[in-house]
Image (cartoon, rainbow, N blue to C red):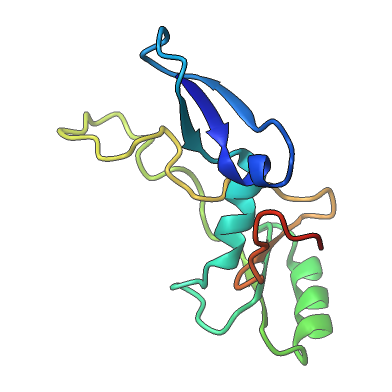
Length: 135
């Protein structure tokens, strides 16, 4: 079966993501490409940060950057600046896990990607683009 991103197809692009079993079946099935997946995730509200539209996560060792960004964004409604407190993955220990519930080794919806200055911007509640509608 051919795996197609329906959103890409609606935009007039091929949207072919690859193939999946049964490989001898010429039918199409639908998935979502990484770009549209990111847009969809950004359109969802945050359960952890209600009312926040833009979350700025600063690396732990960048205290001066955190203070600067916190001052600069403190008067903007819907923006919050925090320090990343994660030290490592929770399941990196040597103890075996009896039942693995995660589908992927990295269960985070958004993997941490810090910019060279030392922060990451995460957007929530963005208006979702509808397929086929120009920006």
